[in-house]
Length: 428
Image (tube, rainbow, N blue to C red):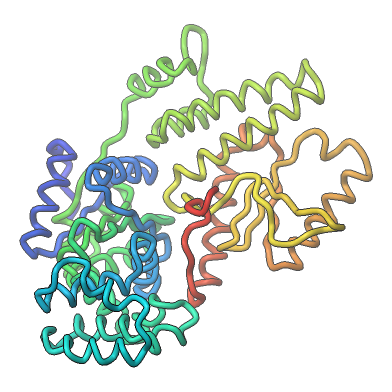
């Protein structure tokens, strides 16, 4: 059965209605049916007044979802502090009393105090989570600290860890989730199944799934399982701007006007709903690239810098690459006594992206230097990807597809490895 095509109600109103259902304990999945950038923009705008952290998930796996969610939560406050606050409230202690009492205590002193308080928790997963987080011996021997300690309590059922920890957190501090990835039929089926299971395990979980309208409708025609019902009930068409709206937006930014025909990549970006900043950076990079024909090497270096700024803004706008790369970042090693700097660096995925301009081809010494740098990065486990600055503008679709493939392949290789906070949050 295809998704409805009738005009949708105002988007924020629908999102608020979904949230009221979650507050009533009704498992609710929001399905943002439209381009990934437009979906991310809407989801972030709606979350902003709620001040919720956002977890972006491209690989639909339950362990990955739970790990990323716990890591985002720990970025707000140590998980053990949430457990101590919850236990203290259950024991009718004043807010903040128990964490203060536990601070600085020896392991024996903590155990004595906690043994008195455990009976205030009803038996179940929440009590197990509290005990796992507040007994330091169980946490400290885990390489990933509290996150690994919590996951180790239910190694075969990670969603139980999510449900237990979600119950320990004040509702408005719980991170929200957006699943957004390649969008093909297989990915969408896996992502819908995971999102449905997460909703069922934690009805209060704020979770959305991004899908194109065409793929979503094809998916809904393929079955009548529980996850299909969740997708159908949460379907929210984002719509596509008309050509007039797109051109009006570009004209307002000074990127289209009388006798000015926007390039196909620029039109595509505007149709996808990227932020104005991305469109402006693209326009600047395009102008700089065109100027290199008349103005020579110096202008080519400026074009390279403009292409870098645009590509970074675009990567930050796309759900499957946001937060992964740092711009002009230092690697963790030296080459011939000097720190190695990379145009775009993802330590998490071990990917280095270089944007090559005119000076990369001026002589043999420059070529050799770049090859030494590539080899050093590869020896430290990085995949090295190089693009021409001109192609960042002229062949944008090809470059974006290449980067998505690289990111997807690297994520697949790390799916079992411990995950860390996004590089971009660390000062990218």
